[in-house]
Length: 228
Image 1 (cartoon, rainbow, N blue to C red):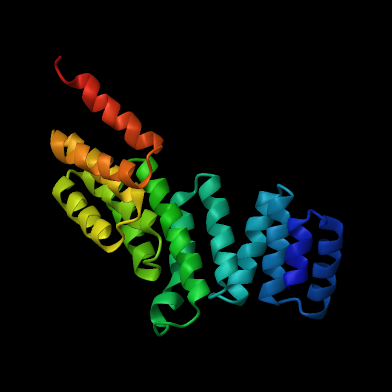
Image 2 (cartoon, rainbow, N blue to C red; image 1 turned 60 degrees about the vertical axis):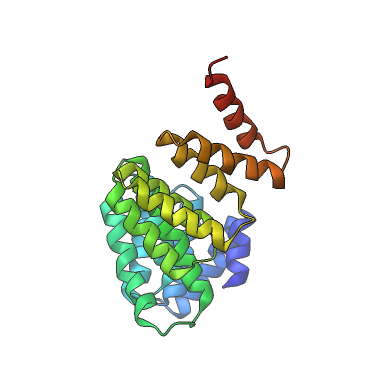
């Protein structure tokens, strides 16, 4: 299977198609081969055929995570957001049912997908759903700080600025070297007219990274707004 995926990534579509054809001749209901045929069709721009193959893969194996992720990505790309979420959530049930610690790579794959869905909701100003998706991503993989930063932004957009600040303050305490957290924390303080707190956050960024462009720009903004 890895060989076929590599052929697709290398755009050796004819070679990949032949191996998939032979595989399906031997095993017509093999979910892996159906998924790979759907993946191949998506790379060829044949989205209708790709969607049908990926759905067939999920009918053969409802917990086929690669097929679920690929299908939901395609559905999102063509604007079928609700259907994409249903597909993903159905496959995602197996992740929450399994014991903690099993198959970390699957957890991370689903976490990234929840994060992407959260971004989609955020861009469409559906902040409740964005918070929900970011929270699921954090539950599956708490490692990336960006998951928590994006959730804080969504909280702020909902009007829960205090909650957003508290979350980022906790994250800053846990990971003092994550400068993006301090940048965003400064922006939240600034949005509440807490200019001094914002300034302190951005200055702390420059202490660790003297050429950080965002911190420099925001501090210059503060200085230019002050009366002479």
